[in-house]
Image (cartoon, rainbow, N blue to C red; front, top):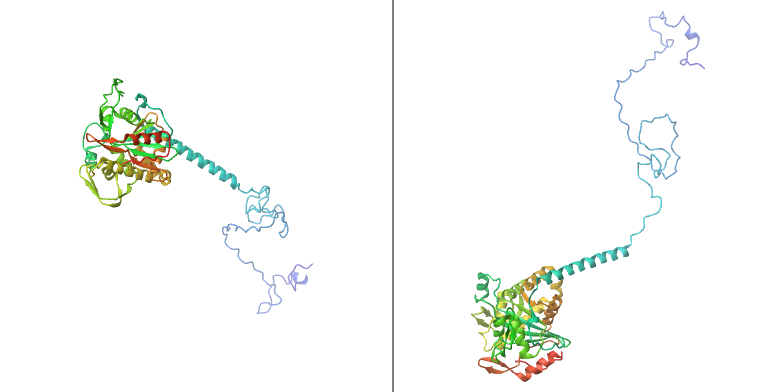
Length: 433
């Protein structure tokens, strides 16, 4: 093989011709050896960082299409990818790049039925906890200060439940500003301002107002504080004198003695508490058929539908100087209490904590009840008040037969018939005044 440039032979390499000049004035051209000159080497430069060549994604196990290199070959790219290996492999060196479809058992679908059951159970437990907590909170607020076991010579209990509901003129806890705003005056002690018997049973609730000027006999009794027995005098007086003499226990004793009806529970509320309850529920809407004023109670009402706040509500139920008889006042009291219960004992109030808790807090803090009164019984009483003016409910005054010394005399025959119907939990047919 001839490794010399084209046109060169062994003769050309003879020593006679190599390195000798020509005799001609012009340099040799065709016969001269071409001068091959190397290009100068470029200045040294810092090598550029290797570019990351995108790794082609191939199905697992694919090993074609790429050249196989010897172990000593270094391409200058350090990608960590082993060519020919699948991108979804699980062996060493397969940590980079996107993985293919997950290998192994697929994740099971969510069990929505089980999740719903667990969620419902958690909700029920939470509601139960709130309900139990609310019950004990409310129960702790009841002031069980009346001991009916001190009442002597009581009539036998009948069917159904009888509550004696009393509105007193107690000013306990009221500031001077409250007394002025509510027109209550500043009299010491407390007296009954209204009295009602509420009977609940199988024939609907019945509410019977007892005028405070009712002419009754105060029987023998045992003092609630002293424990001393006081004999009866046989004389008659106003019904509210019993409360003024020895408080709730003597009032219950006097009502039972004059009616023959067993009183199961006692509930009392004062002026301040009454106004707070009305304000807590945002007022009570009432339709007043005829306008009236009373400077003593602060009442000044036009005729028609209107919403009464706490101060106005108290004036409405206390007003008596604007009427010719105390019976008119008791009718107003019944009407207002029924409206109060109807607008308070509602589902929207019970499920709304922003209405329920202020209302219960205002009412329960100011109630005085007997020692055997449960929160459940109190709730039944309140809902029964709601049904007094609707459905099978009955609202009436005690039947009156005339006056005795300025006091209202009960119609004894009608009162006996009425009390027998309540005791036997029968449908009330007696009409009151």
